[in-house]
Length: 501
Ligand code: FAD
Image 1: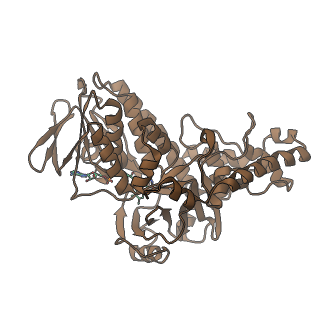
Image 2 (image 1 turned 180 degrees about the horizontal axis):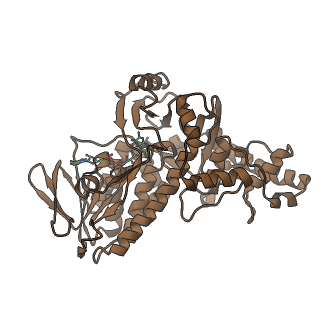
Image 3 (image 1 turned 135 degrees about the horizontal axis):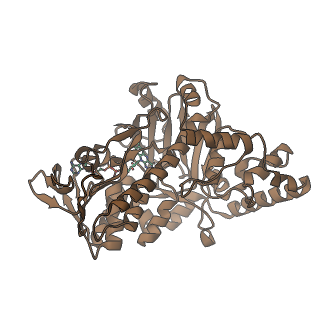
């Protein structure tokens, strides 16, 4: 539609209206206010009656950078959101019942310019010279040992677990400080210009019109602006991602917080456990085609530690993405734009990517179709590679023990993913595609972790004799062990670092 209606493009953008105040809305408000607050007017409309989705508490390292860009103090942020550090995700029972692995942040070993570390490790393992792949990654060993500490020169790659409700509240204070205006109200309808199809105003239940030049849809699964008003269709990815329901519950903390998100496989889905300073976030994600809600709920409640602090809450979703996230003068962020299940904690990252992209293409002098196209193309690339990485966790598994896992392991996957699986299986090779989020290290950790074994290694590994290879591998492993053992216990570090918490 917006391709054909050029009128309305090119109008200077002075007023930005954000619809919705969950994590997406307040992250957008914070970044816009901090960077452009002096030159644009920012309003955010949210409704306490409707509330937020209330989950989304595990992040990836990009959030650390986002906070640095905004000049958000880490200790203050962590105290305000009762955050803990995260070094990776523990996948329990995904490869096979009773078998676990960790997908951690950071690098494993040292690459040669012709070949990744996995090739040297594969040869070492063949010769009986190498131990677990994870033993060569600092973040992974520290996570296993429940240790954490900041290291000089950003020597440890980490993210956070955070309380989503407190995070939105924290960002609200931050945004208001930099000039964003919050309006508490329900959006009753959305006005558009019949000539251009562009949004002109949000109409509140009081009848007040909130006019703007650019509208950011952060209304969650409702997708009030992008989906309902602009009519952008939804690409449904449920042929690859079967899960369509989650049940979330918060429980008391029962022990020291670990610097890991736990992801525990069930016969028809999986369960998360996210340790915060003041409580634990839990939830179960499942396919309603493969299990009924009551069974999933009982499995969740039977596998939490500590007393429940909230009533279990059911959240239904459809995995997929809006065909375009920027249409006309409306940009969708967060759940309004789409949702991939949270096994790799990518949603908050995608919100952040959308915000940074918007700042990079900000249409001060008017919306240009070329900017819109670039924004949408970059978003599509991001999503496709993340989608493939998530599907990988289901496709590559030795589990065939239930219909759910059997269906996952035998499904046809996108050609782009099948190619990467074939390449790794045949030759141990992995190549990062363009700017994709997950680097080689992540693909290798998950492919090996899920049970793949490449058939050969790169000839560069053969240039080392056994003694040299042993020395190379042992040197990396002992360096990792030494550094990890010098880090304090994670819980102790958090208590010292965030005394207010
Ligand atoms: P919401 O939080 O739903 O906010 C929507 C906002 O719009 C609210 O303020 C609401 O009041 C407002 N609104 C809606 N309609 C109206 C109206 N008519 N009038 C006024 N206001 C309105 N992401 C991660 O990165 N890591 C995770 O671990 C993770 N886990 C998840 C687990 C589950 C089960 C689910 C479903 C999601 C998870 N996510 C995770 C995704 C993450 O929760 C979201 O990306 C994030 O919370 C952003 O949500 P949002 O702001 O888009 O929507």
